[in-house]
Amino acid sequence: MTTATLLTPSTNTTPVEKAAVSGIADGFDPETFLWINFHRPDGGVRIWYAWTAGGTDLGDKIDSIAVGTGLDFADWLHLGDRHVQHSTRGRIEIQAFALRPILGDLNAGERGPQDRRDGIDRILAVAAAHTGRTPRLNVCTWLGFGPAHIGRSVR
Image 1 (cartoon, rainbow, N blue to C red):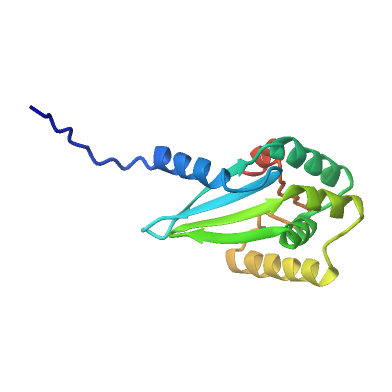
Image 2 (cartoon, rainbow, N blue to C red):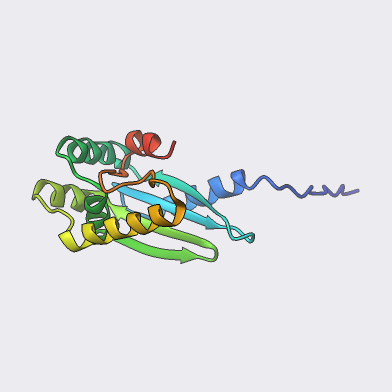
């Protein structure tokens, strides 16, 4: 006689998301930083970060150089935008940052353009006026590509 096993529904999506992140990461080249957004039915988003082989060390090296040379949020956006691949899988949005070319741009002195800095300043000014508070994020904030810096940025 065969015994059927009943599955109990769960609201804990962490194991499924963790498995999905692992599977997604397997499909990317080494030295890649993945920013993965899981869009929820209620409109929320849960963010996961992952690195492929060699990505954690390279991401931390990039962050160390960037912070040490005074790079900021506009630079982070600019360098990231130059070397990101966007894709989706259903409600999962994936941004894959190729870290080796980002390091190359960083070493070559590539910086975010002034018009992007001005745009960030305008957004921050509007947010401050709308909320009556000073926004936590400012143009001085390098968000990071490595786990050591990202861990400090998201707290």
